[in-house]
Structure formats: structure tokens, C-alpha cells
Length: 492
Ligand code: NCD
Figure 1 (cartoon, rainbow, N blue to C red):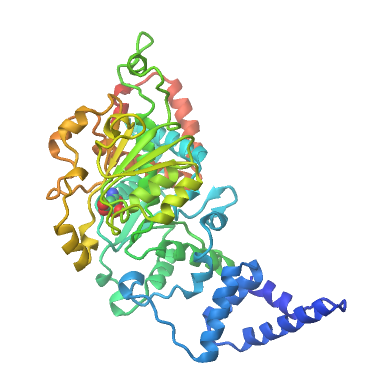
Figure 2 (figure 1 turned 90 degrees about the vertical axis):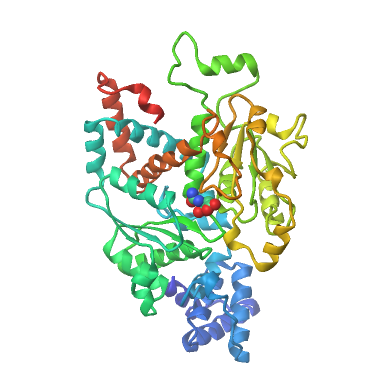
């Protein structure tokens, strides 16, 4: 790209025309600025402005030029947000593009290369990953199937870089790697790495790419995984080393792989099958007596999200995935406090996708016709993310009544027979958004949901390393042979 821009700048068109004269003078000025500027940020923005013609890039580039001319120092965002020694300037012009425009940057041809945000996943890809997860789940039940899976990526190594607390995402990714035979290394506490000596996180990631074949990362810095993906793409230009970056949760921004396991759980829950289904009768058949309009699948369903709507990155990523299906209703049930409520811009984004968005303060408020709790097909509970509270939040929340945002057995009794209750976990024992007495209800999917994380993350890795079709072929041969395992165990 660097080279292309220089060519454009130094070879003005030979045909004389006042416009051409103006353009070639501008190109000459930009060329001089490019050669003489010491600011890498300015150079990058200039390249992007010329390369894309995007007004945001041009705006940033001019802002940066004004900073240089006036000798202005930019105020950098706090280390809490960006991490120590982190400089996003090189990526700023790419970060500020609309997500649709960014998607090709994270693909290698048709296949995803990096997993950065939920919008990269189409319903067709989600279906494909869900089917692959089902195959992996089934093959893992037998020694022979397990051995086959275990051999697939034996030559690959993964790095789990989790500098923000995690139990399920970390462990299920580790288990997913192990299922496919990958070996894993981890950094969880940056104080034990060279970051303690002042190394930047971006340098750390670059180092990991020298030793490993994939970096799975969680960071408290929003957009950090995205920057790492751009860095990998840039490295590919020079060293052809571009390993996948997988975002395991980025600040308050996105958590795309949690959304994958959520949607996989929802796909399965909304297939309305039961291990005891037979040609003589199925659970779906029974449900149709009670709910004659019920259809299998996600289209046309009603979802409720409850709790910390604003700060919950899992809600954001799942809502984005669901918004790609047809005729979806989403109820958002939470306090109308600015720290917790649905952000306006996110609401607009969902509306633009044709989602029926309804904000309410209680499950007992009337939805379209009946109380919301009786209307919904799936309830997604979340905890209040107290660790992000400011002193002002603490004070305001201390005076608020959160009773409406806690599920009770009485509320569950009013839910549809086939509705599912999900929670990304951890649940907050002290707050009690889901009391443990609900765990035995067949509609409580949250433990199965967490286990599904292992299967769908295996499917994701298999897809990224292009072995998912090998699994599909093996599965086909395997299931055409007489079973040597208990098929009913598939529910596990
Ligand atoms: C979530 C997270 O980290 O965003 N947990 C998870 O990954 N399973 C939800 C949360 O912390 O509340």
C-alpha cells in the first residue's frame, strides 16, 4: 500500500487541465509532507486518506497535520482504557470505519481469518459452525472419534493471552484446542511477562505470532483485538506471517465467541427435539398442540435481555447475531439509568436491521399482547457489572430498587413450556439475578450453554484451520457404521 500511494503521488497525469494541475500540485505537497514527516501516525493516515478517499480518514489526517503544524500534543486516552504503552494511532483510521467495511480485512478469501466482532458471522456460517459443533460433540463420545479429532491439529500451537479475568472462555477455548490436538500456552498475568519491563501489549502479541499459530485473547481494552488483527495483516505484507487473532472479549465492546455459543444453544433449543423423540411422537409434535403457530428455528422469535444492558458485551454481540434473522423481537429489561440502559446508537443499529426493539422496566409489563414473561421464546439474563461502577454509579445504584431484574421461580412458572433461560455466567451470587432453585427447571439452559462453548469453539478452530470439511467427511462415514456409543448421550 505504501508503494502504491507513492506511485500515485509522484506520477501526476500528463494531460494538462486546470483540475489536473490542482491535483498534481496537491499530490506534490502531500508527497513532500509524506517524505519529511516524522509522525508515523500522519503517514498512516495520509496513506489511508489517499487510498480510500474516506472523509473520516481525510478528517483525521488533516487534524493530525494541524496538530503537527501547531505543535499540539494529543491527549492520549487513559492507560486503563488503552493499556500501558499502547498506541492505536497506526490503526485509528481503520478502527473508525463502519464494521461492514472492515469485514473483508478479517477474511482470507471467503473464509474468516480473524474473529473480531459478531457481525462477521452470517446465519449461513452460524449454521455451518453449529453443524460442525454437533459432529465434534458426537465424535468425541467415542475413543475412535476422539482419536481422529485429536490428530487433526496436532501440529498447531495456540496462545491464550487473557489479561482480564476469565473462567469459562479461557477453559473452554483450552479444552477446544485439546479436543483438536493443539497444544496451548498461556499468559494471564502480564506482570509475569516482559510487559513488566515495559514491553507494549502490541509487541507481546507480535512475539506470540512468532511462536504460535493462533492467538486467542481477552483484554480490558476495547478494540485491542481488532488492532492486533490489523497488525497481523500488516505483518503479512512484509513477512507473510499472519496468524488468526480471536477476540475472547474486548473491554465493554464485543464478545463474539460468547455470541457463537449463545446462538448455538439457541439453535439447539429452538429445534425442539428430545432424546426420546421417535417416529411415533416428538416433543415438537406435543408443543404444536399447545402452540399451533410454533415453528422450528430462530426466525420470528421473541427474546428478552435483562440486567446490565449497556455494559454487557455479551448482549451486544448476541443481539447483533440475532438481528440477522427474520422478524425478531427484542425486549430490553433493565433500569433506565444511563450507565445500564440500551445505548441510543445501538438501538438505532438494531432498528436498522429490522428488529422490533422494545425497552421495558419489568417482565410483567405488557409486551405485544401479554406480559413479556409469558410472550418470550428465550430469556437472556445478565449480571450487573459492578466492577465497572464509578463512585457516582455506586451512589445512584445504592438508592435504586433492582427487584425487577431478578428472575424468580414464580416468573419462570409463567414462561412458555419451550422457552429457554440463558446467562453468559458468572452469575452474581450476592445480587441473585438467577437463584439456584431455578437450575433444575428444564428451561434453565445456562450450564448446557457453558458446555456448548467448548463444542462451538472447537468448531470455530476447525473452521479457521480448514479442517471442518475433513470432520464432516469422517462424520458421514462414521455415522453410516453401526453405533458403538449411546446416541442419547448426544444431549451432553
Ligand atoms: C462474560 C464476559 O466476560 O463478558 N462472561 C463470559 O465470558 N462467559 C459476562 C460477564 O462477565 O458478565
